[in-house]
Image (tube, rainbow, N blue to C red; front, side, top):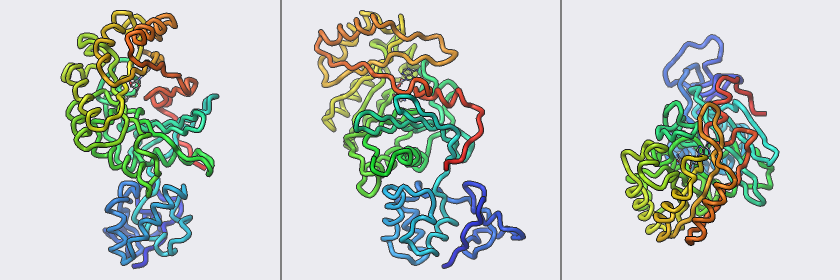
Length: 388
Ligand code: SAH
């Protein structure tokens, strides 16, 4: 069945035939090539079943889906017209059924250390952030999973206004593809850290299919072992991940070594305390055998004292785990302080002398508000720009 190519300049996210002059709305009539106004489906949400079903419906062979996916993930194309080994009629049909991009770039920042950050505006006007980090040969992308966050960590910019909604699988994948487009053709994304805005374990149903495509040889082909999911530690979701036996590396945001302090800094701790979180993390370790990382944001004079380090040793000494210490990255309007160099050194020394492996996270992209949620807040009202 022949479909009309979209008129140029149509609104994002809806059939561009709406722009054809003099057409009356006719429901679901794109197939006839007339005005309809029907919303386009996000192709990146339809890769598994929607795209193959569409091809069946228009009488085309299944291998066309593989070709489309190849253009998306390996070809890095920005529109259907450049998928040159597809018949022209199919390219036109795809463009009247699916949108390829649903985001616009509201801001693009580059730091001196080559870290790049995109503020993406979603079709509904909400904004999210994603980051490309270059370190030696590594090309790491940091992606968001929600608009905002419901966990309420008191020092974090992402959750200050609560959560708005989950991102779809396509919106998570689109961040990866947008970041991939920042790389020259001979460079590939090598690692994924799910450490952007949102709590990934609160949106597993959409995150896991996105990671499937990211790690599939028919997708971005990134090794599952190079994917890190950072979570505040929701025990039920951690258990689900353990049962499903994923290869992903798990980082659990602890931030305090006892329930009183953790409940103050990470309010979700009031419903599932430290013991539950750590024991669910143990289950994940038992299932996939990968050393756990525990993240610990160091807040000056709050959780960075020797007694905190000693309590942390008590939790971690017996575990196959390492601690990632993150000196607090100041968020405008929040009262917390970056720890002194001396406090960090002392903390590290106590952990190390007790045999706990520890790393202090090097801050990347400071000048571009690279910590989660910061750019979104500082640019709450700017106009989107079009990606060239
Ligand atoms: N919801 C997930 C992902 C959050 S972002 C989680 O809780 O793990 C990744 C890490 O950055 C988390 O450990 C988070 O607590 C930490 N973080 C958030 N804001 C920060 C800030 N201003 N300075 C330093 N680390 C921060």
